Image (cartoon, rainbow over all chains, first blue to last red; front, top):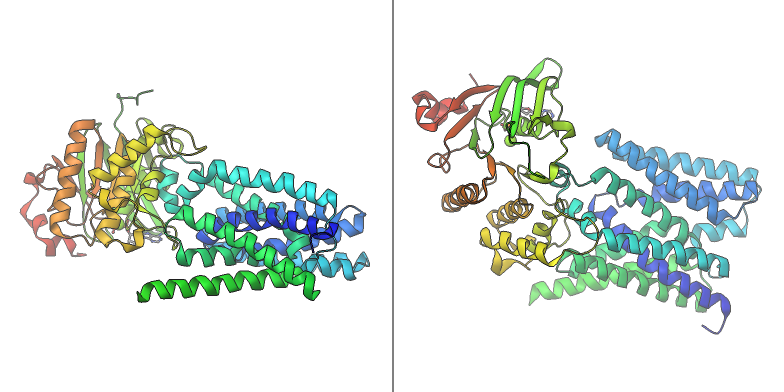
Length: 266
Length: 246
Ligand SMILES: Nc1ncnc2c1ncn2[C@@H]1O[C@H](COP(=O)(O)OP(=O)(O)O)[C@@H](O)[C@H]1O
Ligand SMILES: [Mg+2]
């Protein structure tokens, strides 16, 4: 399987995406914003359509739309604290509607679009790999450097605020990273399923982890393993990789739940 | 840079606040807490204690009057690293696993750099804070495995780890047995003596701190008593009276 160029590219991008998505998703899950990825995915969809319309690489426009959407929703959330849910709904449906309208006027309801929705192992180019590696590793390094601060906000947001930790800026950063992750993961996992790769490994890891740090690292491990397993299945069974990857992550959740239950019984 | 010692640590001047129009929670509050003081804030549930400390710390904006910290407007206070706050019912922002050490380390964020792992000196201070609240043996245990009182102590250690000049604790011992309440009161007293930490201790029962504090503030829609606990009028001592809503 790895003798083919496109599979090597898919695995390499998949490795970055598999590490990045749960690392960012961890901080969304902890703030009860598991579903934000879905909303951002829909703005990314509008971005893809804009790309087709303008004749620009859809990856780039999707990336911009996802980051803008994520930062926008965080801004709305911080303005009207209780309205996070409504802010998401607004983003979610506007993005989806704009995407549908723009994509059909660009005449892009074709196979390409399907691959953006559910992922494809055939579409990753060398240029994409470079983009994903540079920005993805940049995202991982950012999380690594700011891990202590991000974790501190998770532990006690109010206490962090009082002590002068720049909570608002860190929240915007997480939102921006979520947008980045979705833009980068789109080709491998697809817009409709990327949110699942941000959330499922985190929930799975939470079942067996013993600390916050071990949760994050375990989630990243499960993320990469799910991507590799999903890509392999997609290759041999000729399936869209997004579905196979997310099913693998869901299976990981099943396994860790069993482990947790077994440990409780001892 | 040391804090400006010419001003009170906390200063509220004619502060009024309401969450909803025409339903004032606090009216005409005047309060000055000088550096080094240990002040207990007591009063009935719903009396406005939490609201008062949130105003004092600049987490909420008064509808009228002014709130200052060390002479600066509380909302834009420039030395937040000097503040430690244990919110009421300090609860984790996470359902996922997190250890005592991870919680306490978060208290070290205000000091030093936000970037990279904790430096060695910071780790020593975190260990010391954990030891201060008697959780050393449980330092690497997930918080979820601890009792309610032990979890509260982890959050208190988190505030200690920031080496605050002003420490505000909002009902830190709610649901904790009397013995641990006394132990905490003695610990806070020692801290204040050793490190001159200005302490505001909110509790709707003040039995545990009564012998330690030199000043008690009773809050019930405003400040209804402010003075040494022994001068508290007898009728306020009667819990049924203090808790009654007229
Ligand atoms: N966020 C809020 N929105 C509306 N009302 C509130 C809010 N927080 C507190 N209150 C009300 O303000 C009053 C004072 O509450 P609080 O300051 O929490 O009192 P205490 O800490 O003394 O129990 C109570 O009547 C409470 O119901
Ligand atoms: Mg309260």
